[in-house]
Amino acid sequence: MKMLKIFASLLFLSAGLMADNWLYIVNGTSETLSRINLSTMEVQNHVLVTGPVPNQVAVYAGMLYVINSGSASLQVIEPETPRTIAEIALPLNSNPYHCDFWNGHAFISGFISNSVYRVNLSTRQVIDTFAVGLSPAGVLCHDGRLYVAITAFNPDDFSYGQGRVDEIDLTTGAFIGSINVGKNPQYMAIGGDGILSVICTGNYDDIQGMIYFIDPSSHSVIDSLATGGYPAQVVINRFGIGFIGAGGWTGPGYVFCYNALNRTLIRGQSNPIQVSTGAMGIALDSVGFVYSSGQVASSVTKFDYYGNVQGNFGVGAGPVSLAAYDSRTDISETSAGGHDAIRLGRPYPNPSNGGLMIPIIGYDETADRMLVDIFDIGGRLLATLSDIGSGGAFYWDGRDRAGEMLPSGLYLARPRGGGNALKFTILR
Image 1 (cartoon, rainbow, N blue to C red):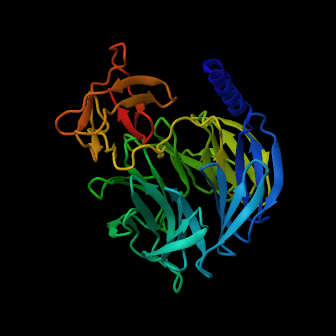
Image 2: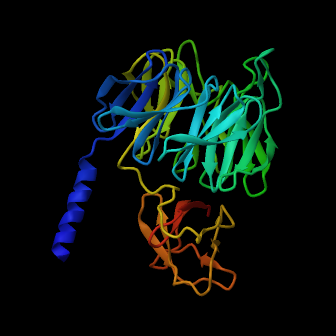
Image 3: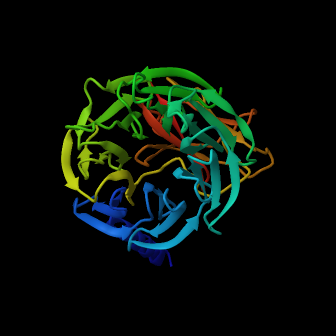
């Protein structure tokens, strides 16, 4: 029996290793989906027809989702085939803009309706509507909260008011509050230290791009960084480096990058990474390569951590959004089931230059013994914590199982047997 289990596990692993890994591209002008094989870099164009005016492609729980602004719908796609298996209707004339996912639900901003819609992905129905500020764009789910970038765009006079981020409790739906940021915030990302990067594009005239950094624990802006230009879509890699699609509509396209941990600019308006014209969508694969879509050039550029271009790949007309469907992806900050009532709290201090505490939320001293595993970003088990202090928190001294002090880097903590994984940073 044991040998059968081992054989079954090997078959499962080998199937995962042989599975194709794809970068999916939404072509806004041709209204189709293209994809690029991440191993061979073979391009397959127009593999599926989207709805009218597609804005975004996203991956969640093994499925693809496309936001169609023209038809006000969320298109559900089986990625391997690929084929459309459902199209979820959203309120008409809402101009759905961007989505993120949490606990089996999609949260979708309605740019014209000044709302965010909660969609139950099992029943494929809109089950809740949250009223937010004027002309919401990017949304982000993190640690039980929904963050909404409020552009404050006024369609009557094409002006931009006070940019802000609205915050909503994902469990109760209660409005928590608003945090003022710069002009025209559009997209957001969470760094390894738990700090929220808010990309403010500016007004396309005399006010240029900025990044605002929000500490979710204090609900406040803790820093800002001028990028110049007009940055928009953003991703942050495992080393804490953020990459931002920043247009460039004639000649080369522009991608900016910055250190999200120490909040310094690496490549901005004066020295951007040069990619295909009209850089819009931005995505990462699991091995560290970055991809940008050139909306004007109708191509995708692949480049490495340092900004060295690896190639350009022709796709459909007007690519606007990218998403990697990558079976090689390592441990990420997502729920993996397990204890619903007991979960890890935010590690502190974060970043840490020594040890740190990992609180246990919902801890009961009469409960079964709990173990917490510490991994590096590649998924290698480094240490296991077993002793919960009287305050209901684990202490980790920053050492591996051999007693060696671990170097600076991004790490993850996860309860043994499943549960939420949390990222934290060690800075020596």
